[in-house]
Amino acid sequence: MLPIRHTRCHLKPHHILFPAVLLFAGCSSTGSRFQSLDLDGNGAISRGEFSDAVAELSFSSYDRNGDGVIDLGEWRAVEGGSGNDSLFKQRDLSRNGRISRPEGRLATEKNGSLIALFSSIDTNKDGVLDRAEAKAAIRAARR
Image 1: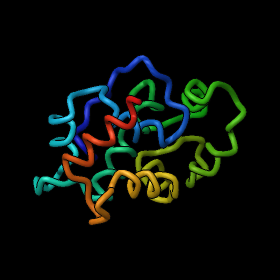
Image 2: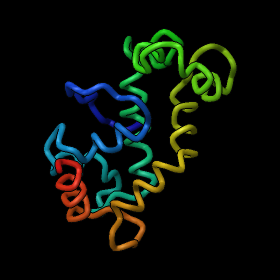
Image 3: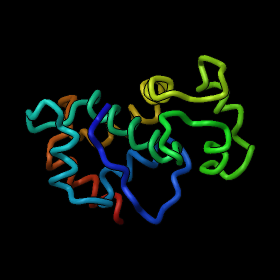
Image 4: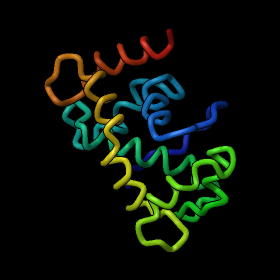
C-alpha cells in the first residue's frame, strides 16, 4: 500500500469521493502530497496512483482502530448509523463481516464516480494529473 499518513482534518468522510476531494483540497501541502502520490517520480499522477491514494485514504478513514480491516461498527461510525449496511455487505466480498484492504481497493477501482472525478481534474485529457491540474483542482475545491 501507499506510504500515506492518515490526514487529520475536521471533516467527516461520507463516501469514497470525499477522500479524493480531500486529497486535493488542502489538508496538507500541495507539493509534498503531490510527490507522495507520484510513486514512479515521473512528475504526474496516473489514474492508478490516484486510485491507490484514494483507496488508502478512504480505508484509513474507516479503519478507526488501525487493525487493517473495517468491521461493521467502524463502518457505521463513519456512515452515521445502519442506513448504509447494504453497501458494507457489497464490499465484504469474503462475507466474513470485515472489509479488508484488497476489498476496499477493489471497491475503489470499480467506482465510476471516482473515474469521472479523475477525468474532470485531468483537463488536458492526457490520462495523468500534472501539478498545474492538481493546483487548479485545489482552487476549484476551495470555491
